[in-house]
Image 1 (cartoon, rainbow, N blue to C red):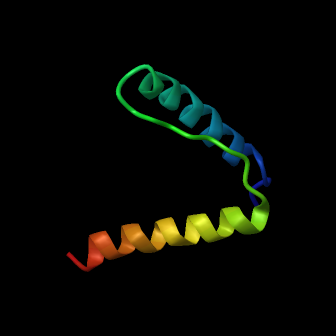
Image 2: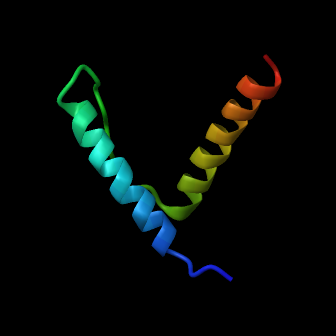
Image 3: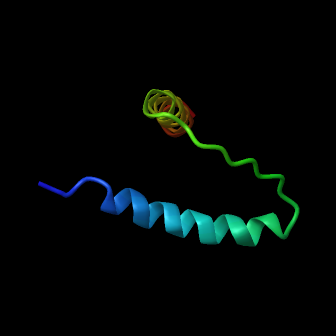
Amino acid sequence: MLKEGLYEELISEKLKVELAVLEDEKYDIFKDKLDVEEARKHLSSYILTIHDLYFMS
């Protein structure tokens, strides 16, 4: 089984680098900490949106 946490950290670091580049351009990016339950809701909503865009279009 995969060890929890390592992959999220790698993804977070990659996103941090990419967001830093975008922040210097024309994007308005807001970052805030989420609790676990709130993060689950946001992730579920995002996955549903992507699913609908891909499969319903």
